Image 1 (cartoon, rainbow, N blue to C red):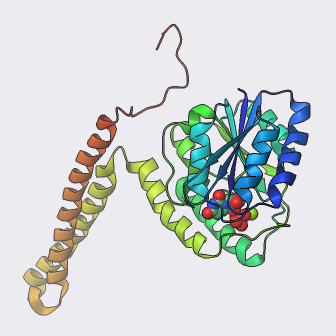
Image 2 (cartoon, rainbow, N blue to C red):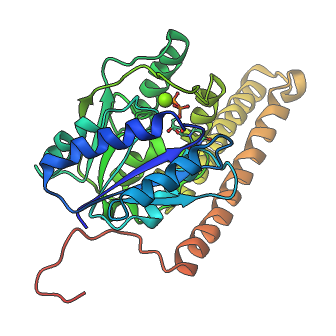
Length: 315
Ligand code: UDP
Ligand code: MG
């Protein structure tokens, strides 16, 4: 199988037949062995019924995973990936905001030698109240992770299957797949894709998603930068605090000896002691985190590196 399209579906009954037509039209000229995995994320309308009909009409290409309840877009995408058989994996939204006609172009780009091609909704058709927070979030993610993309939130991205095997997706994290992939050495690029306004059904998300995304960013940054060496983060913070405390204490000592000001004159002495204690605590937390990191990697036999290829080796 060359290509798996993954479509998360939540209350999209009117969009599904049109989506399938568009997918068929896009796949026709490509001459690929393909499948589309539609994941019904506990829809309350007739979506599952429509999916059953589509699957019956085209048993070769249409595959359906029906989740037991609504788990959210990220979980639906993860379920699709788990069931996918393609070497290339492209998720896209069911609401026709992404354009299946872009699939060919994404694959072409991928074949230039990339592992991830990230879609960029350059003419995004959403309200200002959606696009503005998203601009800020994109800027922030780019700065914090060092993986520079314009549009993390665009569902439509093309992945080589190998770069999707190393991690699980929680919360709102499908947008961070390129960041995880970059951390394991994937070659990443982006390209503009089309974006259309939603014609049928309702958008399921509002502003609160941006907040979740920012919280997820902490986790992703920690996992990709420090999961293997947490002591660098905690220990570094701890040592800095101990350093600050030492400077304060030296200042108080000099003031005491040369200017005869009692160290108890100001709250500085108590503060210095507290900062030092916080510093020691942080170093100790780093050591506990190191134990956890070992449990995490060794209990699951997770390697601390990823291999692109080997030569004259069978493994
Ligand atoms: N979706 C889903 N589960 C949810 C919410 C949304 O599978 O709980 C799907 C939805 O059907 C659509 C995609 O995720 O295919 C994006 O949803 P939406 O269009 O509401 O998000 P937006 O385009 O506004 O980011
Ligand atoms: Mg949408």
